[in-house]
Length: 112
Length: 115
Image 1 (tube, one colour):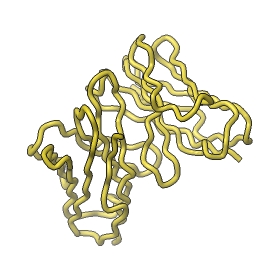
Image 2: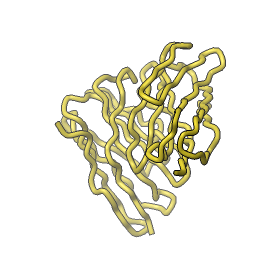
Image 3: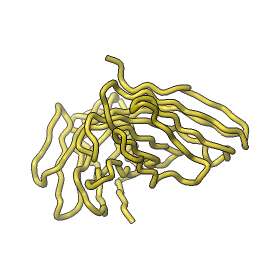
């Protein structure tokens, strides 16, 4: 059975801290791994990772995929209160399916 | 240039009633997905439409759930004889490419509450 596991489930930090969120997966026919930020109802896209070892960066956020370890990390440096959200990791399957398999998310709370 | 839209934004219904949830994907997007998110859970895939191909229904939890996509655009998710465990946020997403090749853009969701 395909599964995506995120850790920790929740995290509380103070502004300025650096955080690392983890995602591991066991999925047949892996195509890509995606990170989303969910603040209210709809997730917003952060990164899509397909190749192992290549870091993707957007401002204070960065992410990297390790296909050997079947995992990915999302780093946020110099956290701000606006980073408070649920961060979702999802794996895209190849083949005829186009669906994403999501983890349960990491709830990040950034205190002032 | 609107994004994915969904209606209604909130729906409260009584156990046993049927409900219809609507999704308008981004114009030109051929792929459309339905997901649901129950309290404290990750997003759960329900169904995937790609162009005129037969939909992938592998995620539908029971035969009370069905979905249609008319004219390759608007989609309706129907839940018959609703149960309390159907309470969740139902999210629709669309993508310009099928087979997971493109980023999925999510709608705002419909929060369904079954009393």
